[in-house]
Length: 367
Image (cartoon, rainbow, N blue to C red):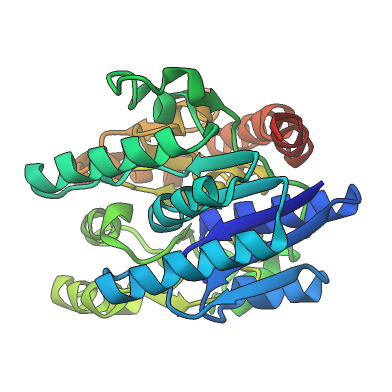
């Protein structure tokens, strides 16, 4: 088949990893694959390194601009009419809306859209949520099939009329990847003492990730306990979070690494992994932490409870609750046996239920 994947941004967040994995795996199966995306970020570099053709979309960006959206729409329409793919698989809300409409007009036989989470679940005014719901409904209506990456993601749409037959669940999956030896990973993260407790997260620094809640919990934890909090990733909130850490008086106990290429290889240097998100679908970083046998503390939002069984393969805490997050951090820090048990159980879950091969097989079958 000729398959074109579309996504708005070319940084390397969860949705971009999804596109990269599907594109490279589909190419291995002998399909003619291309990816259309905005700008020239890490996704573009990684795809080109794997000899996957990239079609640059010069006008596409996350911020809304009516003129740029019109230019993007007609550019996508032109590409689809020239390329004539059997499958056009869109990701992200903007690419989904513009791309699915263009694909309908271009007569593409199979239009697939993947919902990596819904913006109406994020904290925002009610009128914005209603507008977003209508746009998501239209995007799904224009698709032939829509993939939800978790049961919760699908269940969020249970009241949307006329589209239920288009929805299906295919969980995100990951393949094996190399981890640095523990001491080497810790050196890269700036940890030189073997007995230092290292709590970490790997995330875009975005409001929905709840990292301000983690900082508040960490401030309480470090009043009577030693340790280092490592935040791997970059994003729009970095300066705000650094200022907040300074206001809390914990700047020396928090390390912001910025963007790290292949950051998941450093997960072996942590003792505890935290994911305090306000909203999620099914995050790749959680699966990666599981593969690294990390004990995980995460919020019970989105598809996270489909991955972690509280008390058996990790700990689930309420969102926006720094007090419970603090007490759980304290419990984990004092019980290495508990950490090892939970980390081992999560790795078994990830290996058995969330494999890359299963995700690819089910997706190619859908095509």
